[in-house]
Structure formats: structure tokens, C-alpha cells
Amino acid sequence: MTLKNVKSSLPRISKSLKATNASREFLIKNTRDVVILCSHSIIAAHKGDLRLAKQKIKKAEVVLKRNQKKAKNNFKKYLITPEQEFVEAHSFLAVIENKEIPSLKSLKVSEESYILGLLDCIGELKRLVLDNIRNGQLKKADRIFSVMENLYQTLYPFAMYDKIVKEARRKLDVNRILVEETRAVITEEIRRNHFVKALTKK
Image (cartoon, rainbow, N blue to C red; front, top):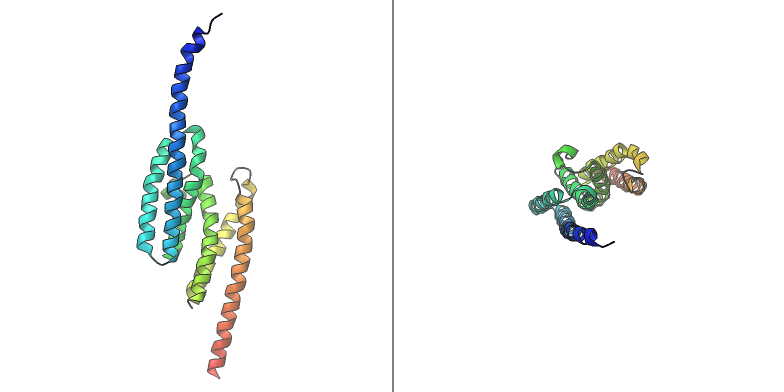
């Protein structure tokens, strides 16, 4: 018995594994870039710089598309985080501009990433509501809270798919608290405004 067959097989396997490892390294690096770009987009949107926010999303989209072409079979798991960040950034910008949140089809991401990205957006909307209250823009804050609450209620049924959409239930539990806290803040602010108006009329 010799190792002739083994030795003839190993170079082919080595070449395949080398290519696989190169793809993995490529995805790890570039998915990180997508996450960073989307994060910068959200930060810019919070600051009111929508032009920069859109530029960052556009750059993220270019990198993400490159990643999606590279990710095959068991590498698709590397796309979940960058795709959900991409959905979050797009959705957040849409709410700020009072536009429809993009569809799954238009964003071209996985179903899991779409749900998780929308869930993450709820946390950003709470911050946006509070920022608008601080700036005295109560009407705008109320509009954003309405979107936030409706988004949570629309996504709540997906808690039953927690075994498929990982962390969906945990994110929904966190979002329920965020919605309740935000409702309390905005309700108190509306009451305070009514009280102040009533005093000024006297």
C-alpha cells in the first residue's frame, strides 16, 4: 500500500482551500467596510447632513454588491450583518425624509437581513424622536414616533420565527421597551406643551 492516490489528491484540495480562505478573508474585510460606511451614514443623518448620508450609503452599496457576488454557499452567513446595517441606514434615511421605507426587493438583501435591519432602525428612531423634542420640533417627533410604533407592531409577529431569524425575539423585546419609553416621553412633552399654552392664554 502506498500514498500515491493521497499525494495526487492533496494539491487539488490545497488549491481549493486556499481559494476558499482568500474569499473568506475578502468578505471579512469588506463586510467590515460596509458596516462602517452605514454607521457613518446614520451619524450624518442624525446631524442633518443628508447629502453625506446618501454618499456613504452609495459607497456601502458598491462594496456590498461586490461581497454578494463573492459570497456563495456557506459564505452567505458573512452577509447578514452588513446587509442588515445597509437596511437600517436606508430605512432611517427614508423616515427622516418622510418617504416610504424601501422594500426587500429594492434593497436586494436576504429576508433575514431585512427583518433584522428594520428592527435595528427602531432604536435609531427613538434617538431621533428625542433629538426633535429637544429641538422643540414636537410635531416632527410625533410623526417619527408614529412610524417607530407602527414598525414595531408590524414586525412583532416575526418573533415566532426566532429559530430562523436569529435574535429577532431579543430585538423585539428590546424594541418594546424602547417604544414604551419613547411613548412616555412624547406624551409628557405633549402634556407640558398644552399646559404652557393654557397658561399663556390666561
